[in-house]
Amino acid sequence: MSHTNDHRQDALIKRLNRIEGQIKGIKKMVLDEKETAEIMIQLNASRAALQKISQILLEAQADHSLMHVNEGKDLEKEMSTLRRVITQYNKLN
Image 1 (spheres, rainbow, N blue to C red):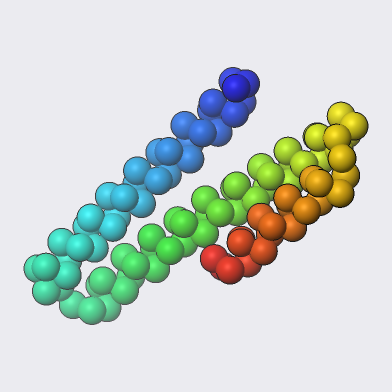
Image 2: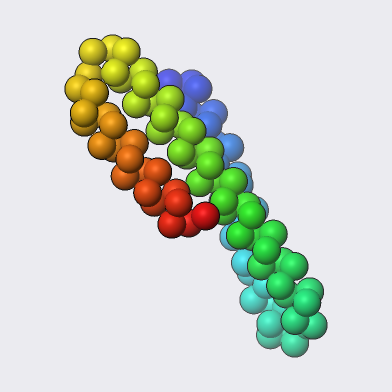
């Protein structure tokens, strides 16, 4: 794995760790019977964070597919993979 990919992976893991912390905080808010509006704010923040990760991954897949095609890999295979990722991205968002 290249340094760039390692760096990207580290950044994604940091984001996921923050989301994990947010979710634990939301769980505590529910157990502590906090106001629903406060819980919803935190749920929306967590959802936005997940959406950002999905956007980063989609962009990385697009870059990856374009580089593969540029290197002579099968265009149809790369397009199929990218379409699957886009479909999943659209379901999340």
